[in-house]
Image (tube, rainbow, N blue to C red; front, side, top):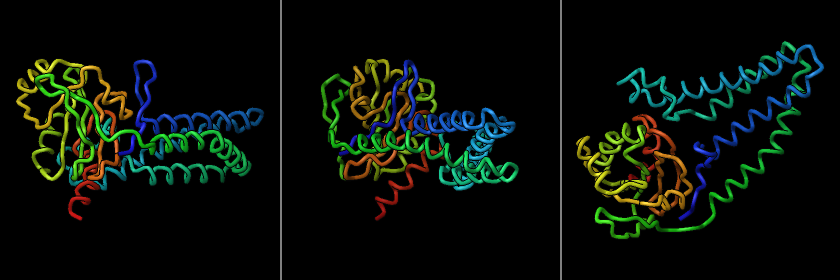
Length: 277
């Protein structure tokens, strides 16, 4: 099994590692463009271009994602506006953002070399961090996690189950966890060929079970991690976090934050394809 450092903790906040690096890239690009145009009359135009490109990229990436999963979103149109599910088509977004930058360069042709120079420096600084993150992500670390069953008895879970595996880290005090539980319950019932495991973080089994009973949620494979070590072991530092593994135990996707119907279906597609093959 391969560990993926999927998130980092910054004080009380947690961010996906790739998300943090992307934010750093955008911020550094903006700073460099502002620096290289500080004595120019078009400095505001240049720095504003970064924001317009980011907005266009995010909007286009979201629209492309919604269109691809429209059969899910059409049941609730308003859910398409809820970007908390993290549904973005990144390649389409990057293409749209770069297109806006090139289009705006037509107004000030001298901006193109400045943009290219700033992008090159940003790449030199940030790209090694992406490489390091990838190396850490592919570091062979563990094939099992230690949890406890409802009686508090220590149990070892093998992440190589012979079929696709989804692990959800949650807690009853976490509002996003509570909201996504019915969705995950339904997915577990509909996909018997995929193993679903729910690992409660830092709560007594009685408290977690009281919440599930109160909400009329029935889950199979519910376990408990009183110290939160299993989530940390797999690089998850925020709740809720859902991890997706192949039948061979390789983590292929991860999602930090509340899952929507569309985002869950997006992640399930590759796992369902693997089962069908």
